[in-house]
Amino acid sequence: MTIDATVPNVARMYDYYLGGFHNFAADREAAEKILAIFPDTPAAARGNRRFMRRAVRYLSREAGVRQFLDIGAGLPTQGNVHEHTDGRVVYVDNDPVAVAQARSLVDGEERVSVALADLRDPEALLADPHVCGHLDLGEPVALMLVSILHFIPDEADPWSIIARLRDALAPGSHLVVSHLTLDGVDAAPAQQGTQVYRRSNAPIVPRTHAAIERFFDGFELVDPGLVWIGQWRPAEGEDPTSHGYGAVGLKR
Ligand SMILES: C[S@@+](CC[C@H](N)C(=O)[O-])C[C@H]1O[C@@H](n2cnc3c(N)ncnc32)[C@H](O)[C@@H]1O
Image 1 (spheres, rainbow, N blue to C red):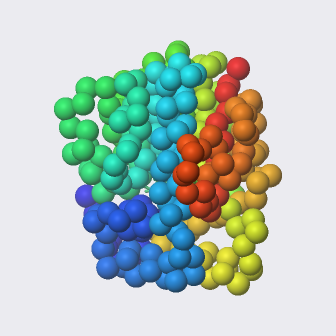
Image 2: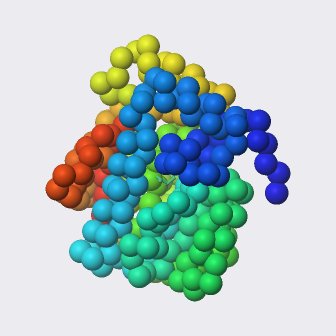
């Protein structure tokens, strides 16, 4: 496994926001620059994790979904998908550190599998034995793209990547997305923040509400639709800090 510890890595920067220890000096320096511009980033990151867990619980308990494909799963700290469902779970990431970390965390869990694969190559991802050998694509799957699509630039056409994955999934499958936005953010901090990520392993692409909603083409948005992450079915008293939008959609 080759790790370049000198280039800030988005998985490890996110780990730092969440108070984790799987990060290097370059990750922490870049993350500190973001914190100087957007001090509420850790609160927003925690809010994003809570959104993910609320979505998993909804899918598991109310929508009857028994299989979860979590792409861009990241460095698991706590509160991961498999801890909120007793269904089958596949974690996918293209970062070898995140994958190694996930494997050590779920070692011995027969219903959980971990794949090193890239969202930008959906056919290879679906053909990975850790994915297709673990999930039954004839049955509904929850496709979780939580805080990953803003690392896929427009040139890579994330809309068609999702369409290819959607077409491979059975009716009754769901799509879960959370995505960074700069809607409502002043131009100067927006530009400074994007600049920090430009020097990372995966430059960030914040998108508008309309652009994010297009990811749900072919899906029916579940109530309350595409909203600020903290507004998607929150529990009472939850911190509403959000840096992005989130939604769940159903494939009929
Ligand atoms: C911000 S973290 C999100 C982690 C988790 N989904 C969450 O929301 O808490 C983004 C993750 O996406 C992964 N990632 C970025 N681009 C990817 C790609 N093209 N294919 C697979 N994973 C990718 C990164 O390595 C990182 O672990």
